[in-house]
Length: 349
Image (cartoon, rainbow, N blue to C red; front, top):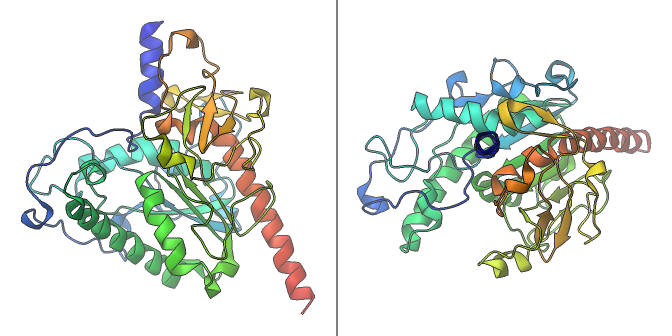
């Protein structure tokens, strides 16, 4: 039983920025910079609708289907920090996109468990990028962390610009991300969508695993209804009654309950959970309940065998796993409404 629970937690441990794993030696300026990715080449994309990758997968023991071939919208997905351990080469502060071992880990963790949640109604575009090492978020030398994150964002930005020019063709866009990915996508939305012409193409933004203030954007508002379009959602998952040491970091943030799709502190029973994913990418019905509390998303123990033995209180790494099918269904609903509103707008001209 204990082994089963250990494996369950490992299955959810998809490399997101949950804690500091390794303290880098030296500063950013003294570390070589990895080669820049060329997004005109397929190999620098973790997921594309034209290539076979882990985002094409659907969970075991589910009837979910990969619908990318007929999808009406696109999702631009930016994955979380997988670069957490001691660097294996000369590149310290940012990951090398040519590191095949790391890329395989990205595929089998976040692309499989997170990006695939969007394959029902979206073509998936997810770039490999020179992600900042997790230490960038913890280093006492703030400038080093900022430089590492800036380098990473420039890749995300370049990939998105390439996507717009070569793949989008005016299609509706979903932005989705987790942890470090949401750090970059928050900025991406400010640079490309918020108050800009491209905002008209935004179905919704799922900026998961990052504390975001409700006033972050000027003209893009948090979602308060499941069918709204042109809005954003965000949450950070913890065990019920747990208050993290940095709770002030979350207190000013907006938290979306992904079982209700609003920021109320109403309790959502696990019966509203349409299913999550766990060990071996297996579908788990009604896996967890959810309730917002002062910027946190509280959950009770997951609905799995032997859950009473679980001691985990920080479920950051399961932010998407726990609500996999609710996200999937919500994306479909918002795309449907976006399409209806777009048609009504055209007919009303």
